[in-house]
Image (cartoon, rainbow, N blue to C red; front, side, top):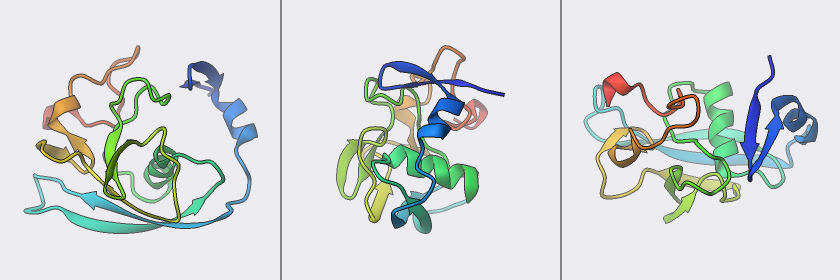
Length: 147
């Protein structure tokens, strides 16, 4: 089953993306992510993940890798993937940035936006109902029942 994904303003089938993806990682990244599930945790905590780091991969690609290969309970935003909507904004190494447009580094700390109620992990209350695509909200955002 092939999907069509919009990358930087162009619609590209998944299989084309896979063909262009480098086969070998150039190094390994240590990614620390602030995790918090208000239904379980009393305070946020940081979890560390070791992931392959490919040339020119965005932070969002690293989050996708963690979600798909290591921990599918990770909650984060993804929407336009082209830097246009701003929904994927997070604190990356102490500075606000778009996860879809910020290049990943060998050591990263990714946190939710400050000053907003945390729904889960990197998802904050501000965007829960604002981020929708043609198919409706992405499953990786948050189950609307828990918002």
